[in-house]
Structure formats: C-alpha cells, structure tokens
Image 1: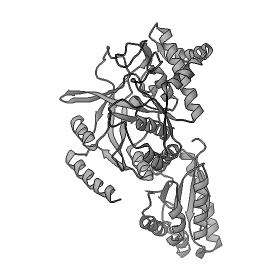
Image 2: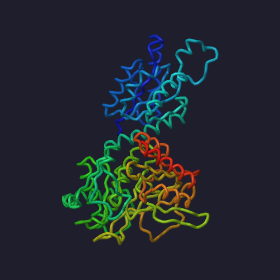
Image 3: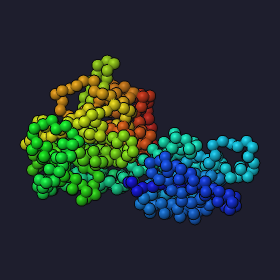
Image 4: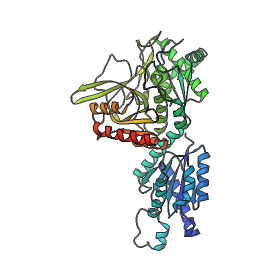
Length: 488
C-alpha cells in the first residue's frame, strides 16, 4: 500500500481559451504538489478534462492502474456535466468531489469578469455535483479551502478509507480449521463477500500448519526468542512453552506469506497435533499487520487487517477485541474487553510481559504463552461486520478507553477497559438490537467517518451508535434501512 497514489482530475472546458486552461493546469499541479505534503498518500495531477473523451480516458486509466486508489475531482472553472457521464458510469475506483477554490478571498480590487471566468469553482462544482447525484454514484463531498488543516485532515481520512477498499479487494484469509461449533455470527456467505468485497476466504487443515511447524529450525526459534527478550519482559521460566509459540509464529507467517494472505483465523476446538493454542504467536503476527479472528471468525479477521492498513500513520492501533464482562456499579459503568490469549500489543500502555498460564479451554498440552498488558487510554471505536442475509451491515460504536479501574491480578490476559456511547446499558441495548457480534475490531486510529466512507465505497449498510443514539431512534432507523435495502 505504500506505493498507492490518488489522481487529481480537474474539470474545465475549451470555451475559456488556452490562456485560462494553462493557468488552470499550473494551479492544479501546484495544489496537488502542496497537498501531497500534508496528505498520507501522494495526490497526482493528471489532466484538466475538457471533453467526454478526456474524462472517459482518465477514468479508464485509473480503473486499470493498480497503484491508483481513487480519484479526486475539482472544477476550477465551469465544466458541463454531460461530458462526465461516460467516465463516471464506468468508474470502479473510490471517488471524492473536492469543492474548493484556488484563492481564499474575493480580491476586492482585482475582481472583474476575467477573474470571474477563471475562478468559477462555486459555479462548476455545483454542475459537476449534479451529475454524480443523478447517476447515484457513491462519493464523498468535501468542501473548504484546500490549505486549511481541517480540510486536509478530512481529505486524508477519505484517502485512508479508500486504501481500506484497495486492501479489501486483495484480501485473502487463511482459516486454520473451521469456526467454533454452533456459533452463528461467525458464519457468513463467503461467495457473496468475495463478489462484493473481494475477500478470498479458504481453509487450511491444522495438519498443514503442524507440518510447517515441524520444519522450523532451532536456529530460527533462537533468533525470534532474542526478539522476544528485547521487546518484552520475560515473566516465566517455562521457556520451552515460549519457544513453542515462536515455532507457531514462524510457521504461520511462512504459510500466510506463501499464500499472500493478510489475515487468519483459528479455533481452540481444532488443535490437532498442536501443543498450544497460538497466543503469543497470534499477538505477534497482529503487531506485524496481519488480521486475526478467534473461533474461526474470518470476517473480523479480515476487518482487522483492513483497519490496520487504514490506520497507518496514526498511533498504530487497530486490534481484534471481544466484550468479555461489564462493571455495572452506578456511575462507574465500564466494559472489559479481552480475549483468551489474542490481543494485539499495539494498544499496550506499557511494556508487555510474556507469561504462561493454564488455559482451561481447548486441548492444550502445555500452558500457552501470551503477552499480558493493560490497554492505553483514548477515544476509539469498535466495529462489527455482520451478514444480514442478502446484505452486509457494519455496526460502529464510539467508545472512550480508560486505564483499567481494577488491577485484576489473577486475570492473566491483555485487557482494555472502556466507556461506551451513549452509556453502557443503552449502548449494549443498541448493539444487540442492531445484531452486533461479540467479536469486534477496536481502533484508536480509524474514525467512524472513515468507516462510513469505506461502507459507502463498497455499498455496505452502516450503523453508527453515538452519544446521541437512543434505542427508539435506532429501531426506527433500522426499520427504514431494512426497507430501503430490500427495495435495492
């Protein structure tokens, strides 16, 4: 994804003459170059489009260029919208309409009809916007002065959402075994998901992993153990258990990379031939950018990888999570999130510890090693992608993570504690009403607006639980949304 770029396509027409068009091109190139310094990905000025053929051509090129993650348009002058129809009808990349203008102020002394003819963004962007509305295109409209940081931030966030689409289209998920028996929400239509989102979700036998693990050398394990010693506090003397996790990590990474997979899942019910459920191994792989889902949850696995890619350049934290239990003391309502073993250390508030403890679920011959830590504070979101039968729904809830209010000395897992919007109990009622899963992706980097943009790009229903959400309003919105999606 580091090689990805976005194309800047500026609208005009030949009516204004060559001098105006030359000025538009120079300014567009200047704006793209300056914006690229502030945006997370390069913005490349491509063309000042003046005809149907030019628009159609640049869209065709964008569709077939693997490095192009999306196009951003702006109309410096008036650009008749019929010339955009053929191109827009065939556009396959995310699209943002940037409603801005080159100059910040109206120049009192300079403004005349020549100035007005050259600076017609207020005129041109409205014409340009109509045709996208008429074609019912998925799009993002961002208005504001192009040098303002707040505008650049919104444009950059939209870029990150578009990168999430690019990652989605190439997503391959490796499932070690099937999902946990009798669990409903981790199921889903893999054929529909591949057609809509691009995900390739397939299963590898646990025996395939065991075979790869047996091929890992002691020298490879020694090298990874040195990394463990440097990055974490070793809080166990059962080093053979830790070495076994290193063996698992090395083997899984080799298999993932060989197959081009960015995400994986496993289940404690299928450990055939393995001595431990991968705990430390899964945490370490997530810290390297791979997505993970427990109990065979391939949807949350892929979403973790996608949101990790979307959040690059932030504080580096999107992770697999699960709501475990609640603190329901009046005035101190919190949710405690954790998992048996697999929480990514990207959210650690301090240096994680490697510990080994008995795990009373699954056939573990050895006490699995895992990283234990407390999550950091900060605003965040949790999201859940669910299959509603005929469509996908993404549920997003605003939360605020806090330092755990209890030390919990006998809970040997990584844990995050948070306050949910609009409150714990109302938030739980809303989450359950919408059908949200028990597995989520928690992110300190990716915003709800970014996830809304990602859903719009991929034609996914988006449900947002905020500080202002009520159960009644949510039920009403879900009812109307259900009708609208069935009509589609």
